[in-house]
Length: 138
Image (cartoon, rainbow, N blue to C red; front, side):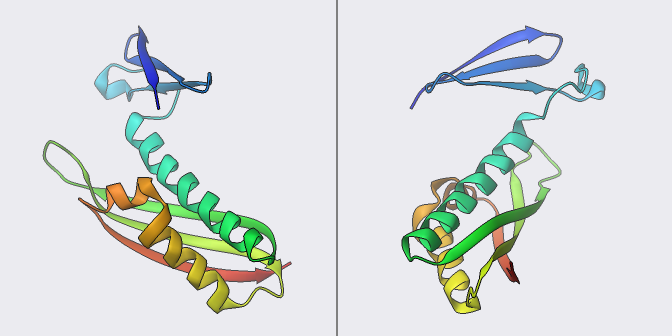
């Protein structure tokens, strides 16, 4: 996996991923940024959410479950001193589908958390991660 990050201007940076996609990042005005894009740490948190949601949808689809939606809401706390690593992350999943059993969704969440999601497993080295979920019929 590869990525190149280039300083653009002010405190803005543009990352070009190995797959050829661009992602912009910017700092807060207090840090010299212009607040034009997400902060790098926000992207790290979003990446963990995307990684685990991807796993959950894939696990449910492979199990031939009728999943039609998956949303993960993430809330994180960071250390007060440098390096300001994540210390606590809560991931709350809202999984929508027809006749989805809570135990099936719980298993998918657990498999992602403990086996498949490399991003959240890596973040779990510094942060306590809680996983909660709800199932919505639809």
